[in-house]
Image (tube, rainbow, N blue to C red; front, side, top):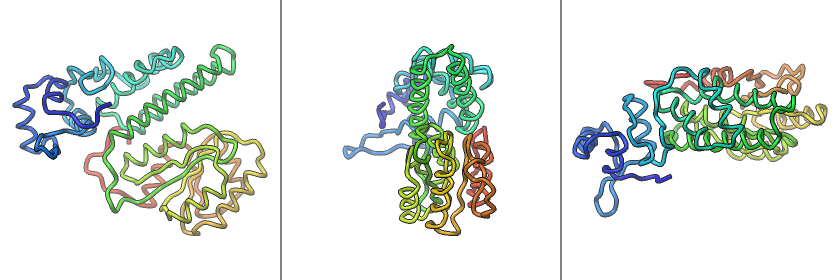
Length: 296
């Protein structure tokens, strides 16, 4: 996807004249950059911001590198689950992008997309795999497709401010499900955090090294699969002992309570879902936002 676009490309994509678009740029409605030669260029994420905030129709999405038909008005996230399920099981990534981007361009936040569209649909695919209605390759392919969409959404978010609080996290050794930790990263990034997912299947020792080296204000741990619960709890306790005692740690995922056990450590929090994780993050470091995206 092209990162920098000419006013002519943007004007064609949203169905206005180039002179109108340049006037909006002069008025500061759309932020532009200048090339060394003095030509205006507009970042794709700035165009996406404009479309979301102004509820402006998208006439030619392909001019922006978006799927043909993207930007259509849709009803509810719940109503789109069937279409998303069909595209994921068929391996139609263009259709998957279109379903998600339709809602995002209409103003839906990443949190709402994750909790009300992506996660429920992936759970359905997982259930269908268990009962033999879906092949394992289809389930894994679906996860990879959603990973790619989330990376795309991440690219549309503004860079964190220099004074943004830092957060990082990942999943422990043996847990290869990287989608959950990526969802956390993008949700926190949309909130204004400088968030970084370290990835999946990471030894606690290396996560502790990252936490000590970078001193984040928040650390998350996503646990969807447990092979040896005692070993996992031992590694988690060592992580707590070797990292900054004041750093809050949010544990989420299907096996979160199994990992935490009966721990009464005040720095450990259970994130039952992305909404509760975001509430914990706001308690740690509230970030003022003038117009928070829908879904928060």
